Image (cartoon, rainbow, N blue to C red; front, side):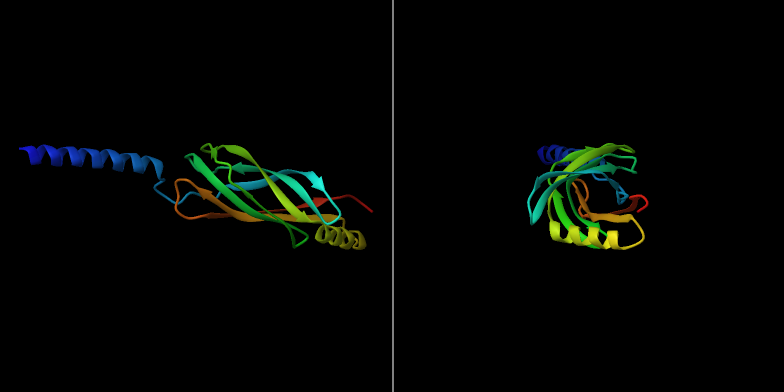
Length: 157
């Protein structure tokens, strides 16, 4: 009789834990969030490098919250990597919603100056930029890659 009650209790606890785990872990692989660069502002400038703050908009296309644990990325300008950054701020991206993440990065100014010089020497005044990276979710075992690219028209010369 005592073993029967103990088994029943163990089975009940197991089912409660299983139900809780199923509610936390999505049943399918989450779709990658859409990341866009909302802004970049200088934090600290010097002759050889600069510290920049990237403000990223993270949009969740899933029907469930995404508990963002970390975000790692590299920023590219005209095909050249200019900066790398990482955010360890935990942010909940609501289901079918969005949130903002600010990431401080160190950028080499030499690469940026060379790209500006090339742009000024060409006939096209367009800035090609991109951000590629991965996000780590608290409820998914693997990192999820993302990529955002764009082009900004500077105007006629």
